[in-house]
Length: 317
Image 1 (tube, rainbow, N blue to C red):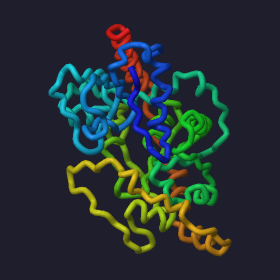
Image 2 (image 1 turned 120 degrees about the vertical axis):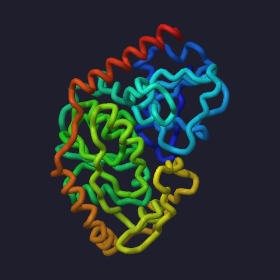
Image 3 (image 1 turned 180 degrees about the vertical axis):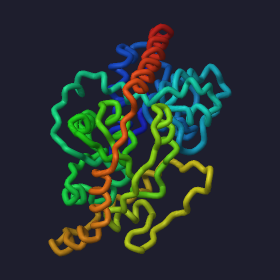
């Protein structure tokens, strides 16, 4: 059995934790049923992402992009759990299968327990915001620590565990913060945010997704996101009501941050001045009322997922 891993060429810690989480949750799973694909953490229930043919064991994945897979071949799919009730409804599954994102189980690992608090507040953007964005500088001006979502997954999670507050554009930053009992505030920098997947996870824990808007940090970020910056438009066509956004096209995303010529002090000063709205918005987000799921709600969902894992061990090992 092998875990499915959607791999961003930039890196994305939420997807990358599939590389080691399942060895903790299902020890020895790689030695059994080599023909089975374990589809776990990620918004990957998309017919264009998952390989055709072969058996797929779904444990907590979510829908959110493109077209749902066809489940006509019963022998091809063993769906034990999905991320939340919205994914279950979208795929026509029993609502009881919408348990929770399996990333919450990371909190049970010794690596992330008793981590000393070293950040008062930190910001984790969505990985797309790192392309062309100047968020490290914005965070410095706003008084927040910056955590790169494209960094090594365990290092990112330790940073989250060591914070007293997480400002999260990255959904998995909020998921991990909540699981580690760190209060969090959701923000978004773009109208292209996939709110479906956020609402799916939030609903599983009785939470509400209510992101605060933070302006983009730079013109280059606006170009990569095809959005507006200081009145200049780089928009792309926005999906209509009820439409689901497609998976970001990684090959067409320009890495503008690496294409720029050396920056002068004056140019940096201008860039920082133009990022002032983003700085002010992050400061306000830091002062906002944070969210945290109820202890009982999180414990109940984890218990249900533990029961699912026990069933998998019984049936596959």
